[in-house]
Image (cartoon, one colour):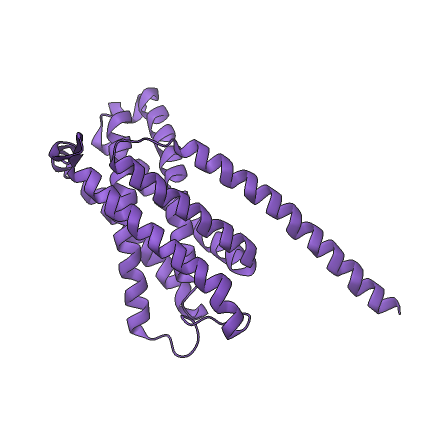
Length: 253
């Protein structure tokens, strides 16, 4: 009870929850883009399963803190740089994210022209259980990478395990509410989708660099992405006004 009455605990909880939400932005974008490959009837379920896996992964890592912190110890050295278990996870995750985002950009930009608007090789035809499980598996892989950094950050900020668990659950709850509107917005605007994929490429590069102890502050990546989204939002608004004006002109003629 004393813990709940301590204002420092609530401050730590609020700060950690906010940080977890910010760190989860790339996870939401990745999930939203993958889920867009499924038929509309399966997307909401896949979104919930994906974010549920993210929460479970974070909680399991929090409950095995000694193992997680042990991942920071060097396993071997490459060209004078120590490589730890965490570095290997970040490297594999970064390479996976680079491959996946690049492939999705190809599908969005090149394959869309071949298959027509609104239809891609992954959404054309019958998307069965195999595709659903494949997408959930890919979400699970990248959840591990994003969760590892998230948990290590949490350990550096807060001492109480209960506060960490509460912050993770609260942040995933917020992400569950935000994931659907973000996913639908990205799906409605192909240009935003390509920007989001470019953002994931940058995140993949940052994770790969981090594996070799070359830290790239995520604030720079988020700032660049926010600026690009602002410019593209203005373009979308401008296109909408032009279309409305054109339709108005047609109606009067």
